[in-house]
Amino acid sequence: MMRRVSFTVLILLFCTGPALARWDKEDRAYLVDQFRALQDQLQALKAQLDTLGGQVAELKQNQQQLQTVVVRQQRMLQDMDQLVSSLRLGQEENFSGVKTTLNEMRAEHKKEFASLTGKSETGGGTVGTGQGPGGSGVTPPPARPVQGYITVVDKDNTVTVDLGSGQGIQVGSRLAVYRANDPNTRVGVLEVVQVVDAGNSRARIVTMNAGVQPEFSDFVRLE
Image (tube, rainbow, N blue to C red; front, top):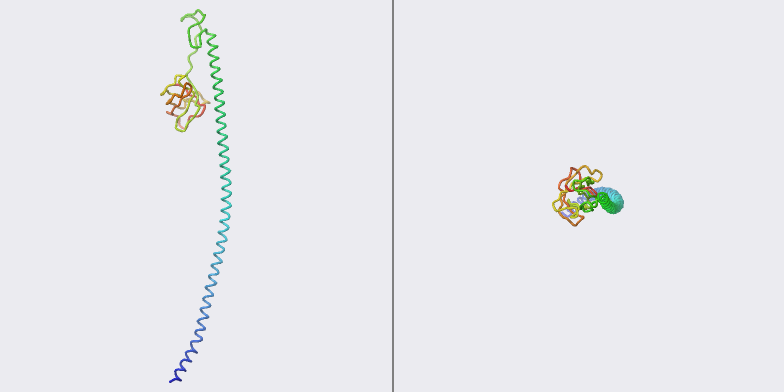
């Protein structure tokens, strides 16, 4: 009996030994294949990471260049704003000088006219001419319409004009708008909403031609 059991054990050991050795070899081959596959995947991931790193570096360089361009454009816009502001101030100063000169010329014209017609500047009676109402004295020219200029254009559809109570302007007065380079073509209408002083008023836009906005130095005439 013992001999049979020993013989059986020997047979089992003899048969299962090569099987175990063969199973270990197959497992090792499988593991080697899996390891190689993992190595290939890791190399592919590394290549992708290198590519992404290059793209990130390129994006950083482009971002720096873009920031430089944006800063340069901002500086250019600031310079342009300063230039426009200086030009506007210069125009306002020039306009003020021209306005003063025109007022002086008007005053001189009135004085000369008064001396020629023998009438005072305030429109009084004749002085030393001996001409009555029906005489042959010089007939004064017709009164010129009250006109001025737009000096400030606000953002709330209002403007400031150089006409005030001294020219008979009142709240509700209507002013016709003409382009500075075309004083014979009306392009809009303003309505006075505030008389600031004797020489300035604020007015709102009532109507303007299509595509036209009031601009600095445009003519305005009392309707």
